Image (cartoon, rainbow, N blue to C red):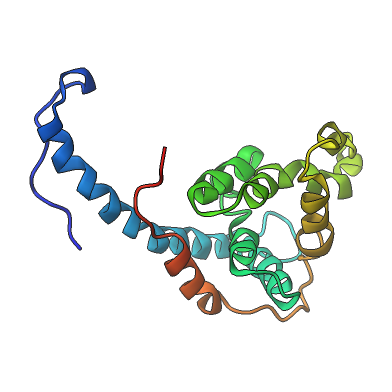
Length: 188
C-alpha cells in the first residue's frame, strides 16, 4: 500500500466537499497500516531508558506481557500488557493515557480502562514512598473494572522489574502487534 498523490483542495473543513473526503478516507486504512511498525519503533526506543529502575523500560514491558501470556491471558490482554507503558518516555506523567488512546479502537472497554487507569493503581505499591497517597485508586472502587485493573497491577505490572526474569524478546510479540493494531476505520 502506498499513499496517493491525490490531495483534497480545501483550506478549511467547513469548505470541504464529498469529493475531497473521497480522496482522504481511503488513506486512513493506509495510515493505520503503518501504526504497528511505529508502535514497534516506540517500544524499541524504551530500551534506551531505564529511568533509574532495575530494568530498562522495554524489559519492564516485555516482562509484563510475558507474565500475562504465561498466565494464559488472551492476545488482547497481552497486547495491553506489552503497550501499557509505551508513552513513558514521551510523557511520564500521562503515559497511561497515551497507551490507552493507541489501544482504544482495538480492545474491550475493560482492557482500555485497565490501561488508562493502571498508573493510579500502580501507585498503590510505591506512592507512599514519594509522599503521595497510595490509596488514590480507591476513588474508582465502584467501577466494574476495579478488580480487573487491581489484578493487572498486582500480578503483572508491579512484579515486572526483576533483572533475573527471562522474558520473551520483542520479536516474540511482533506478530501480535502487527495483526492486532491494523483495522478498518473504527465505527464512530
